[in-house]
Amino acid sequence: MADKFDVIVIGAGPGGYVAAIRAAQMGLKTACVEKWVNKEGKTVHGGTCLNVGCIPSKALLETSHKFVEARDHFAEIGIDLEAPKANVAKMLEFKNSVIAKNVGGISALFKANGVTALDGTGRVVGSKQVEVTGHDGEKSTFEADNIVIAAGSVPVEIPPTPLHEDIVVTSTGALEFTEVPKRLGVIGAGVIGLELGSVWSRLGAETVVLEAMDTFLPMVDTAIAKETQKLLKKQGLDIKLGARVTGSEIKGNEVTVKYSDKDGEQELTFDKLIVCVGRRPYTKGVVDESVGVGLDERGFIHVDDQCRTSVPGIYAIGDCVRGPMLAHKASEEGVMVADIIAGHKAEMNYDAIPSVIYTSPEVAWVGMNEQEAKAKGIEVKTGSFPFSANGRALANNAPEGMAKIIADAETDRILGVHIVSQHAGELIAQGVIAMEFGSSAEDLALTCYAHPSTSEAIHEAALAVDGHAIHMANRKKRK
Ligand code: FAD
Ligand code: NAD
Image (cartoon, rainbow, N blue to C red; front, side, top):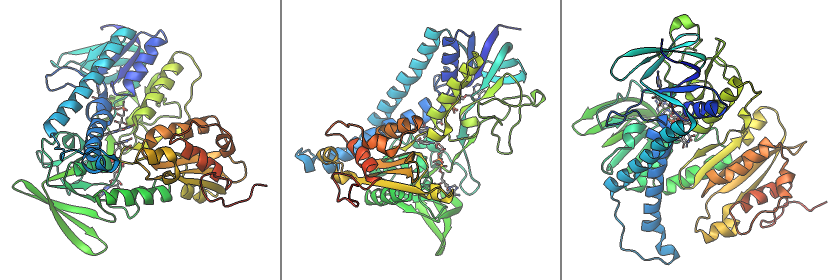
């Protein structure tokens, strides 16, 4: 038997690495096992998020956005350029350098905080035992008073469109296209479909998104979702709703996709196809059955509100448990669990987790949307404000979008904030903080906002809840 630890974390994604650092900060002897290796065969920390998820996708979203700004919008504000060219190889090089900086940062934080990095595949073999199979196949068993499983998730694959070399790919392959596809198909108008569809569409790919559901972004407030759909369509994304993919065929370097919609059977041919129809927990084999940790039929590990599994001392966090598959949700669960192990009372507010889709403009929301609140029988009042009436948004040449606040009609408490705008992913933090503090819409309305700032649109939306937005025709007379 090798070393004994207070805590062993399995997986070094944003759930696991944050749990490990926090546990070490709390004075606990901590190890973190990670199996991911890079192209050079070296263990890398950061999981999906840093290697093939949040960070690389945002690097490509930013570069492709800047390219579109230069190509289509600089002339509008008085900057004349020769037609810019997209250098995909350089963009990938930039993205890879961003990944390298981020993953290197986590390994450095492990060292600085005294977290022992164990390279290899971890498996819980007893309620206090983790077996680690090194990259060379050698096995060692470690003891730990507490175990945190943060094994993450992998893309869902569907039988009609089996992956095929670099033609039919998941999000991971779509971060590596070495040239802009002429015709790009995307299956799923979810977060990944819209983000990666946008990247390649901006760089010139004719992009068709096939979405099985009839409703676009059902988790977002209907008014914001409609506005987003309109704006993305204007940018050239051809989003086909109610399109259920039924089959595909590879011929040479292209793929023909069959789908059915309200008009019957259809087919389209693409040079590349991205399958992004959701992710599934990556838990197969991570716990020996004899340990008694319960999993549901889809492979999610059963946990309570504080991420305790059915076995005392074993916790699970992040994408491999219930709740939204988001990096910040995984990290907050990591902090909560480390604090609980260290003997503190800790909990998490699952009602105030923000979501952001990094299209242009961005879509961001927290809490309930209007249709959801109404379905729950809650009487609501809402306030909306268009960015076309916000001075800073006009000066930024980014007047698209709107902000909407949903408040309880009786108590005025904020139930949700939904935004589509430039930098909505930054603006949403105001909604999250307001909801964490149990604020009313009036609390935001009575707050002094810097001018000129796009945040003023949130202020105006809060004022509009009672019909008193300043920079919009008022609906009500103040009593
Ligand atoms: P992961 O990040 O998946 O990490 C799990 C780690 O555990 C991996 O490193 C894996 O190798 C390791 N592991 C698994 N099993 C074992 C084992 N047995 N032994 C050792 N190690 C093991 N979320 C956002 O919040 N914002 C975004 O902008 C965003 N963009 C995304 C873009 C894309 C293209 C994708 C695919 C995802 C994106 N996500 C985003 C989702 C986000 O990446 C995940 O929610 C997040 O990474 C989950 O963190 P995690 O720690 O639970 O799991
Ligand atoms: P998703 O659940 O967001 O969207 C999948 C979409 O595919 C859904 O709209 C679904 O109706 C559709 N679909 C499913 N089967 C289909 C079929 N056969 N034909 C056509 N459409 C079909 O999943 P995703 O986009 O793959 O993202 C996976 C996870 O990664 C999400 O949970 C998300 O939270 C996370 N993620 C987050 C971010 C972010 O926070 N910005 C970015 C990327 C990914």
